Image 1 (cartoon, rainbow, N blue to C red):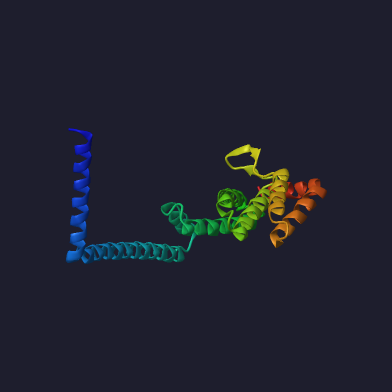
Image 2 (tube, one colour):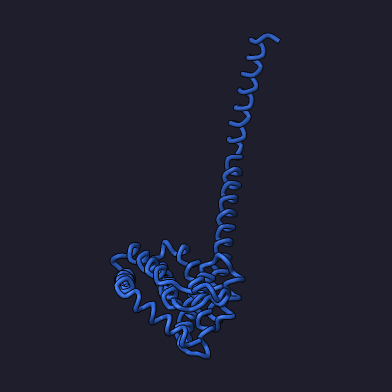
Length: 220
């Protein structure tokens, strides 16, 4: 087939197709196309709305479940069952607050000293995990960094329950943690308090170390 004839056939086919398309539009098929497109848009909008409302409902349910978690065991179970959620992170913050408070209260009690050390170590571990998750939320990250430093300081002179030859806390590490908080948030209340505490620990390191060591040994 010659090239001229082939080109002529293609031109005729294109013209025929365009003619049929124009004729179909004249016959009212444009309205049908618009109706179909509108239906697709509405269906997509409905599906997105349904998906969004479902997500919001699920989110609300998690908050409700968190509200009824009244002790550390329930909070731990909730956090484990809902990893990666804001609600699970909130539960872990509540656990860290609980453990650091309980640990500090038990530390000087001979009958509860070992439990106190364990609680403080749990609080420190929780705050260490939480701190990187709150970079975009300064108040929470400051709490986590301060919690790490406070737990570390309180554990000075205590033995690690899993390894009696290993100290549970270190003054030098506590200073490092306080300074990290002070450097990241120098103008905040927590940042200023951390800076002052780091300076106090440096200036009175030996006395403070002896205090915590004596406290922990006396409670054993």
